[in-house]
Amino acid sequence: VFDAALLRAGERSGRLDACCRLLATYYQNRAQLARQVLSSLAYPVFLVHFAVFIIPFPQAFLGGGWNSYLQQTLGMLLPGWLGIGLLAYLYQGRRGEFWRTLIERLTDPVPILGLARRRLALSRLVAALEALLNAGVNIQEAWELAAAASGSPRLVKEVRTWGPKLAAGLTPADILRGSRVFEELFVNLYCTGEISGTLDDALRRLQVYYEERATSALRH
Image (cartoon, rainbow, N blue to C red; front, side):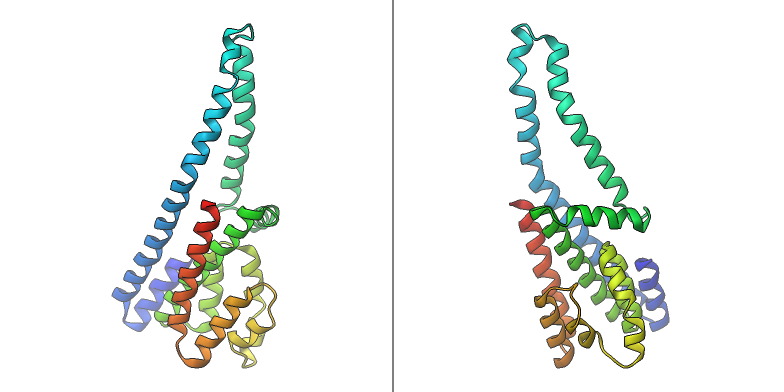
């Protein structure tokens, strides 16, 4: 949906080449973040698997047998593999909003994972919003598409309520000041950028900030 909206905006505004570059940069940043997260997780995952396989290994030669060894190792790892696979499957954009909302509610209370997920969602929203606004998409449509690109059902639900308020003459900054979904830092920087006419710069700073904080949270 985000790709199609950005390309349509490029065609209407005569800036299709610029929109293609924005889209390429957007996905390049997402791919880079995914590589960083996977790279940060590789060593801890290796250590966990190494410990699970090596600790009961002597028991295979001390009377426990290989059946007991496999039960202790694979029996411990398989539920985790299946759980992670199920979460990844349900959290895909093609899955229904009910499942993604459920996963979001389950992961939010988790100290590191929940915080990192929320920051990643804000990073994606800001990157998409900047690209859409630069492509000439109107503010309401840009916010709705950016919320969809964030992958967070909570943000999508929040932005969907903005339509009547925007139609009544309020700006996103006005609405954000009364929102409990967005962090104070996000609200302050966005409002400052909108008032001062430097919204592009504010969005870029927010995107970098949330991307770095999300990556840092996952790394630690």
